[in-house]
Image 1 (cartoon, rainbow, N blue to C red):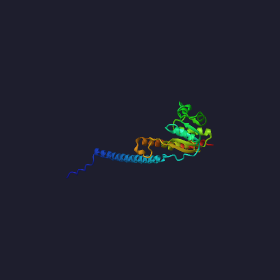
Image 2: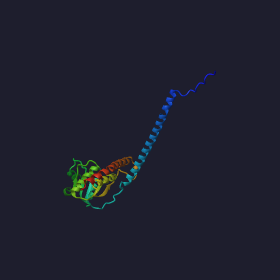
Image 3: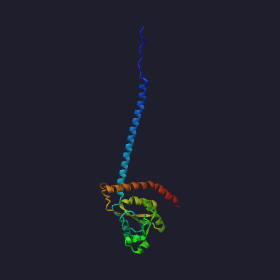
Length: 233
């Protein structure tokens, strides 16, 4: 009688266990690679979108004063940059507005200091120039100016600030005063090279910073508009 054939030897328990672990590990690696590709694509798309927005924003920066003759009820000058006060005073002397309002002035600065620094006549200061001391930033400038405009009963203003600062300032002022006519009156700092901004590290950084602040203000706009509408009778 011949001996019974030996049955084939299958994979042992250890080999079966190793194969069982390999499949989930490979699936995890594939999922991780897919996640990294999705993340890289998202970051690249966001970077491209941000860069395109920066180019668009730079195109919105005025290169020249578009309206130098229209009269308004007031001239508004947010503090914070050289040449703004001088421009505002020159516009007031030229008869382009009834009053000049300087917003965001330090509480340590008095109207008499403005009088002395710019060689103003006392009657000019008393009748036509006022200052606000509560604003701490551009949004605060807009709110402070809006309260002053409402108190004066004014309906139009000429806004004086640096050209690179103008797009964001106009947005903030329009949010604070949607029914007031705004006339942009940019000034042009010599150290800001807007036309070839990408060639100058300082200008590129300044404009990128302004663009980031502009986006932040833009993100607040729907909430502030709804708040303004809810307070209207």
